[in-house]
Amino acid sequence: MEGYKHIEHLIGTYLGARYKDVVEVGIGQNTVAAEVIRDADVRVRCTDVHPLDPPAGIDFTLDDIFGPDLSFYWGADLIYAIRPGVEMIPSLIALATELDADLVVYHLGDEVYLDGGVTIDCGVRLHQYRVSSEQSGLMD
View 1 (cartoon, one colour):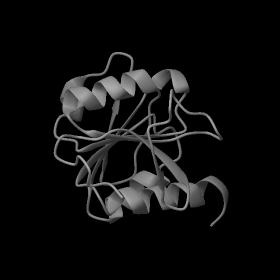
View 2 (cartoon, one colour; view 1 turned 180 degrees about the horizontal axis):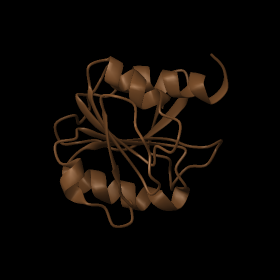
View 3 (cartoon, rainbow, N blue to C red; view 1 turned 90 degrees about the vertical axis):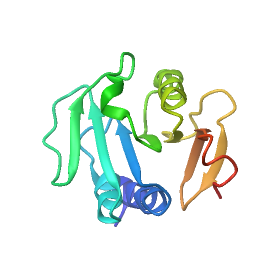
């Protein structure tokens, strides 16, 4: 496994071992991380601004992070995004705050928002921009 598929597999493995109900924002056509998380028996939902026929066991809705439909996200303990535009990060933080969920982002290259949050090494570098009140201090 090489390239982005390998990166997404590492991300999915890490998140799937730590959460119970996740939403990937801006999934696009690369569903590897969501599938790995689903295979860990975690509830997976995903959104994008473009239509997608998701793999079995993954709920999908058209949604725009700049004006999200909160009803789709309720109950999530994690919001995550893989290679989002940096302009999306404030809206992702606001959504995670509204839901009291963690927010984890894998950035493209060295792009980060502000201080980059807490860095997590799971074989690739993740950035945790928000920790829920329940998870506070529990992430490794």
